[in-house]
Amino acid sequence: MLQVDAIDTFYGETQALFGVSLSVGAGEVLALLGANGAGKTTLLRSVLGLTRPRRGDIRFRDRAITRRPTHEIARAGIGWVPDDRRLCPTLTVARNLSLGIKATGFRPWTMDEVTEIFSPLKYLMAREAETLSGGEMQMVAIARALLGAPGLVLFDEPSQGLAPKIVDDVMAVIGRLRAEGIASIVVEQNAEVALAVADRVVVLSRGQVAWSGTAAALAADQPLRQRLVGGLQ
Ligand SMILES: Nc1ncnc2c1ncn2[C@@H]1O[C@H](COP(=O)(O)OP(=O)(O)OP(=O)(O)O)[C@@H](O)[C@H]1O
Image 1 (cartoon, protein in one colour):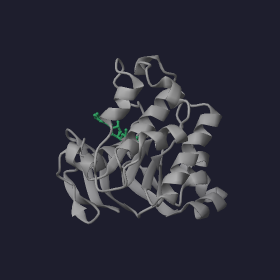
Image 2: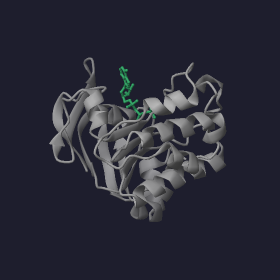
Image 3: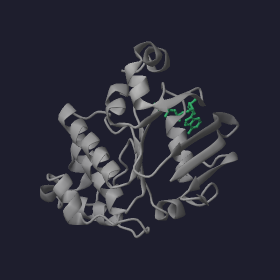
C-alpha cells in the first residue's frame, strides 16, 4: 500500500530524516515509535507532502507521490488525523464532517456508519467545533478522515490527552480499519497502547530507523523494549 524508500527530509538546512525506509501493507497497522524529536511527525508530514523529502521516494499503491501536492495525496486515499485535530473551530460538527467527504477509489464511509462508530456525534452535529472536549474533537477528526474514503490513515498521537475509555474506543476503530483492509500508521508516545493494536513497529531515533519488526517481538522482549523506547511509557 505505502512504500517509503530512503527519504531525507529537511526543515530549511536542518535535516530531520536520514534515509528512512518503511512500508505498510493493506489492512496493516504500523506503530511508529520514538522519543520526542525523533522524526515521527516529520515522517507523516513527508508522506502527506506537507514537508517534501529532498531525496528518496514515496509510493502509494505503486504510484510515486513524493512530489505531488497535498490535496492530490489526500485524494489518492491517504487520510490524516493530526495531533492538534485541525477542525475548523467556528464551523459546526456537521460542516466539519461534510468538508472531509471525498471520492478516492476506496470504499466511502457513510455518515450513518461514522455516527454508529462514534455515537455521541449524533448529538453534537449542530455544535461549533471549538465548544467540544478533546475526546469529542478526536472523534470528529477520525470520522472526518473516514468520510474521506481512505486506504491508509495516518494517526498522529491519537491517545494524547484522552481519557482511557476514549483511548480504547480509538484503538477499537483502528482495529476495525484493519478488518476492512485499511492500513494505518499510528504515531504514539504511549508504546503500550501502540503495541496492543499494531502488527509491526518502526522505532525512529534521531531521524533514523533504529529498529523494525513485529509488535509481538517487541512486546515479548522487555530488555529490547527498554532499550528502544525506554523513555516512553
Ligand atoms: N517546523 C520545524 N522547523 C524546524 N525544525 C523542526 C520543525 N518541526 C520539527 N523540527 C525538528 O525536526 C526534528 C523531528 O521533529 P518531529 O516533530 O518530527 O519529531 P517527533 O518524533 O514527531 O517528536 P514529537 O513527539 O515531539 O512530536 C526535531 O529535531 C525537531 O526539532
